[in-house]
Length: 328
Ligand code: UDP
Ligand code: MG
Image: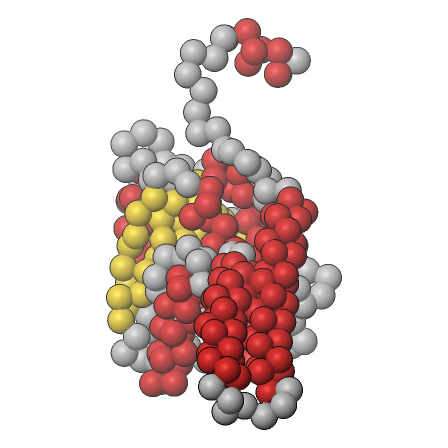
């Protein structure tokens, strides 16, 4: 193996005073063992991102840093920006100083021991390593049901996510720099990272129970997160309206024939046929029209995001001179 590379951990923290000391302690032990084994450089750091906590989280992070500046750093956000934004803030802060970064929750639900394997996969040439939960034994039935339903629903709705992968993942510096080009405001990192591409793989781990404190993701937040994920990643709901409209319009033809037969056989009340026909036809046409508008809204929406249209993985045969011009 060549010289060990710099690993930065990014840990979003929102009101995590109850777990921070334990998380810091365990991560520090992990770092010690990995540095000793020559897996990561001694310049690797653990970065806690304080997401506008109302408790002592930031005080604890500052104290950790003064006790052991060689291990811990901190980023303090101005207000509670939400989990996804906090993770991104951390990743963007370290993107130019690390070789690889791992994002992980503060509550020790993600298995710290999976970090070795993630780093090993990185050295094998993977630019992204997804931490995937192999079991949810410790989750309540309700959490398990809603969370697994979430991944299935997302994929039915056309948002491509790695099943049972949350935000425990390793990304190389290269991938972080590409991530910086995604300018969207509605963040859904688990959908964005697969879009970047590059060689990736999964590492499986057992998800533990929250070490202490309470979940900051109640059902309401999870629903909002799912809706954000779908509407940020898929125009399938808009297309569905078009199809329903088309289907209704077809049915209206059948309704016409039916109403006509009832009319000529003399079984209808006055005005019934025309009412029946217009309900189906107008309903169908309205939905179809909405769907068509939706198609255009979908296009505008994709444009407004200004996502990079392609990502260059490497340059072959790049003239040497271009490097030196860049440096001057
Ligand atoms: N978190 C955050 N900002 C928020 C909510 C949560 O930074 O507004 C952090 C939280 O501190 C934790 C991670 O995001 O490190 C995941 O949250 P949590 O464990 O509460 O979610 P769950 O595991 O229950 O889905
Ligand atoms: Mg958690």
